[in-house]
Image (cartoon, rainbow, N blue to C red; front, top):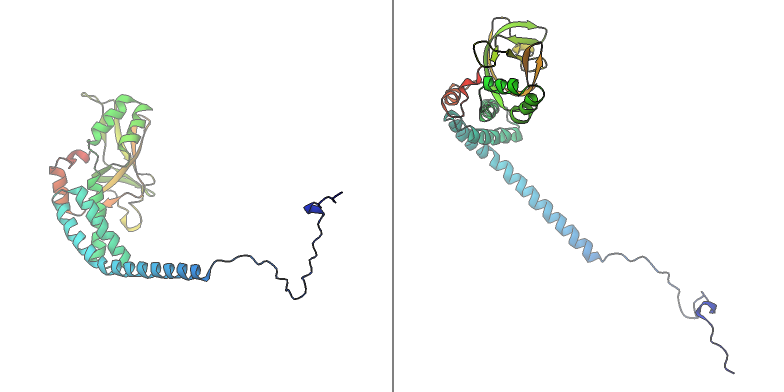
Length: 257
């Protein structure tokens, strides 16, 4: 009778090497040296190309700044405010990347801010905006203001009637409502508005002229109080641009309430 074959699990394996053999333990496989050479070469090439592009970009920045500054100012004074905003913004960014602080860089940064204000002027006069808010009431009118008009800009030209601490009150009252007897009035609440600080803080009787962005509106004690975005104040210095704004279809000449 044939003997049964042993099961694999019953076979004992002698861990000792046979005579003349050397037992070598398995080692974890590693990538081929060629792979690492290839990866290193690719990384080196990528770094070299990136460095060359950065150097070329740095060399191009003065030309980019100058051409965008020239074309941006021309667009600003012609009333092409969207174009001026884009080009002067690129010029200001180029000067900043160069670390330039000369007169051209400083004036370009200022004009870029002015162009942004004029490009984003509220499409409707402020009185019409307040009339709409008052007609719709609270909260619908306020919600509409926040969704449509928040972030739009206005240009303000007014006399200072009082300065209490760091809060400036302007001689600016907007009659809200239609007919001979307006239902309410509106005014700017400049609490937290950072344009008037330090040496820029006006005195009673001073005249101020600046642009800023609408932030919020609320009804308080029978008045509509309009707040401006805290860091949005911009001195408006380019007379030709302001004239174009007053005359053009987007000039918002009634923005000065």
